[in-house]
Image (cartoon, rainbow, N blue to C red; front, side):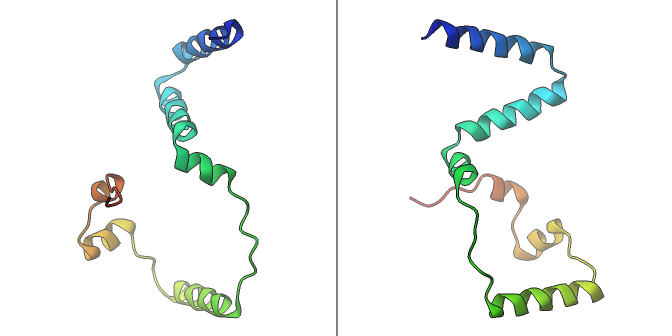
Length: 96
């Protein structure tokens, strides 16, 4: 390993040792995202610049109008109605 890279790693470890627990958790999440190929691909993906179709505009307007007159549905309630749990979503893996 390159000596300067080793020095950078040691410095990073030193910084981690001085962070409060909540910040260590945040940094761990950031590192996981950086190492995850899907997260990297999403972060590097181009901005969606496709124009919104008239059909999509109408659907958005309808949803906004509905929201003006109705209370939102909490995430946990939607999951319960679908018969799934957040844990199942978090642990979901594509079938092989």
